[in-house]
Image (cartoon, rainbow, N blue to C red):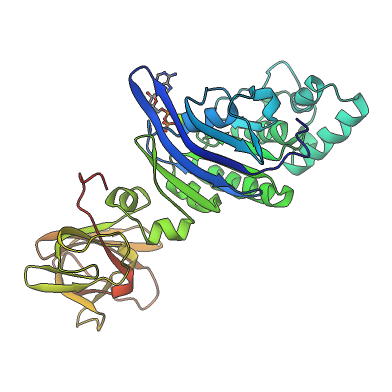
Length: 362
Ligand SMILES: Nc1ncnc2c1ncn2[C@@H]1O[C@H](COP(=O)(O)OP(=O)(O)O)[C@@H](O)[C@H]1O
Ligand SMILES: [Mg+2]
């Protein structure tokens, strides 16, 4: 396979993995487009790494098919797939210089010395490590080492790069910085990236689309905004950030009751129409006021907790005997509330949706 000319589109159909008696990946169907930044996001043990390893070819595809462009690669050995790879513990060779580490895949591919020099130069420029070419890996910070690993993965210009928690060992600030750099490089080179992480912020920051995995299956697939704002299940809602999930009785796909209060939730589509349901609304969508908010949903509440987080103030609220969370941006002139204050809590119908109660397999 000529990897530089190969397509960067990867299609999984009915992909599954069985370990012993356990199906750890089940019926995964997704097409990752050429040039897309695609993330597999989910809790530990949800099958992200196993799915990536099947794409890489290091784990056998027990069920279904994996295609690269028009070619079925389900049984093609890893090396022939031509994918670049960056893993959290994909150690650099400690006894080799940075440049030699980056050149390694080119040596394996038997490129000439001149060509190697040129490509290594390009890769190190791309990850902004030109001045570090002669250092040894142990003279580099964690972030710099991950950039070397990235340079080594892009040096032969694969169409597809697979990454498994590549920033897991870095501290929060550096991680954010590296996310932006990886994203920039991916865009510039037009590579397809399949990225595994358990960090929802990381996935949202980098991805064109995210597949949220649960128990070996894709629970939901969409752009960051789609999955964050319109989760189809309480699981996805909670996994992607703070979520209010108020137990209610749905009377239709867009209306619900609790303790005599009625709610309008216009963000329909999760399939709930009646019976016990959860009213989903994000904390930043709640408006707090001393007088009625004028929004379609408006109930009395009481402040039970105030957390000053800097850019936002997070309020714990008692609403109809249920705990809710509201995030207020810490703007100049925003009224601040204190513990014990009674207030009105409002939110727009378009900002809430009704979800199936948990434990329904939803
Ligand atoms: N080689 C293996 N043998 C047996 N079970 C495995 C193996 N690799 C992974 N598993 C199991 O498969 C499930 C999914 O694991 P994994 O794909 O590593 O999840 P994630 O990357 O989302 O944390 C887990 O229950 C894990 O214990
Ligand atoms: Mg993993």
